[in-house]
View 1: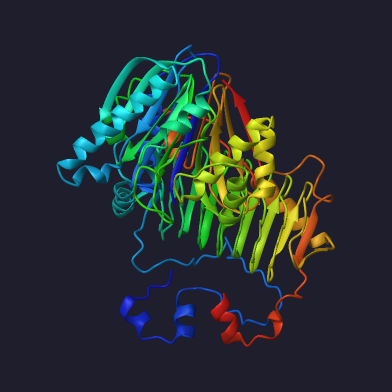
View 2: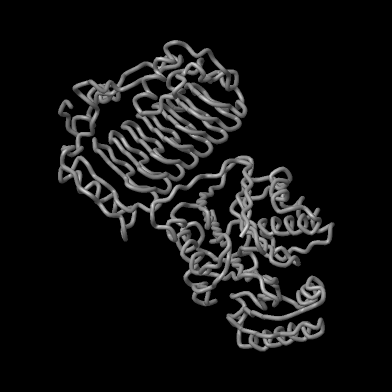
Length: 310
Length: 289
């Protein structure tokens, strides 16, 4: 089933981390396996990079795993130095989850590709605004572990996952970063039926996939379009024509939040819009978790595409 | 209603049971049929165990901190205590509120609900001051439901009877598998509305999305605005004077009568080319319905 949620504040920052936690916790019944956030602070000079150096389940594979993780972490540091990145802050949020704040003048895409050559290392996000966090458990568990309850930012999207076509692990959890394009993330509720055809097409164009989750395709597809100069709104419209299946998905860039609904409108989304805040979720109960007073909400229709600016 | 016990009902044939409960005994002739319960009838359908409630006995129920199961159990308990008017406060998008009420009752929900609001009901009059999520009124059998704002998809899925009204706009697949009753939408409806509709009437005062009435077996859809496209086997039919009189009566009843009247409404029915429905034996038809 899965649950998705998104929020965007127009022209100001807010406690996006706390708001997303409240919304995602209200959607726990739609997906208890894992929870993920893509939250955006106001763009700064520094890059923030979130890296996963193992799966959560790897931690139960004996004491040797700790030495392996130390080795992987050292390799990440080495590659960052090799590419001239200046690491200003490094945090090991969980044994397998790292957060770097760094400055870098070179090609971040090349650096990201180099880092991902390390076995079992995956960059979850890289950008000036985006921080992508995903892990097993519900929103309250993930928010507490990663200190998200007071994250100040302008917008964000999130996901509660009920695993259907792929494993219960972090690499199959949402959101997906649109590797290697900074600050682009995707969450999705649905099934993509031409996944393998589209995936092969994207792979032929040089894109990499880290999982077998069909939702990752949307991130890669969006990244490909954006890299080719196609605006987000046009990319969303094209996806309805080119991607088969039933889906509702949300995309964030550093200053935009967009949504697209498939031609059958088979996957839910409830939308609330005001002058300074837009909130959306698979179910109204998630919006009510942050806006308990009476509000007007709507259901976007089939083939509907919307994009909002922060 | 005529007093009849559970034990007596169990001993009856299906036909006698239907008669004893005051239900219609129409024969399935294969032609379009519309059956309304007579609101003036002195003897209304009611379940033998239904509590006797007093509409003038009113109470409020605050959902804050309660689960849907607790709210629904409280509604039943209040009906047992004779309360005929119950006001639900702070629903905040909660799912499955007011489901399975098989009794006369004035239920007022002050706020918005989630999925399956007042599904499987048989008899109550419901007013919801907010918005409702997916599948509001699913499988309702009788009663009246009025929603003041918008509704999600599959509004009135598989309803058998009663009036289900939304003043605002609704999502996709409105009245999917509708088997009777009336669905009225003050605004627009989304794609595939009336999909596999089998009986009853749907009125959309605004626009209808694509594939309206796709694969409908029977029933009638009236649309006041634009229709994006018709579904497979859905065809336009003549809007008769009787249709207009019925639309006028229904829309006036719910305060949704357009200023320009109803003569501009488009009437959609089944072309009956997909499925040779009229040639089915009654028993086969019962299986489908």
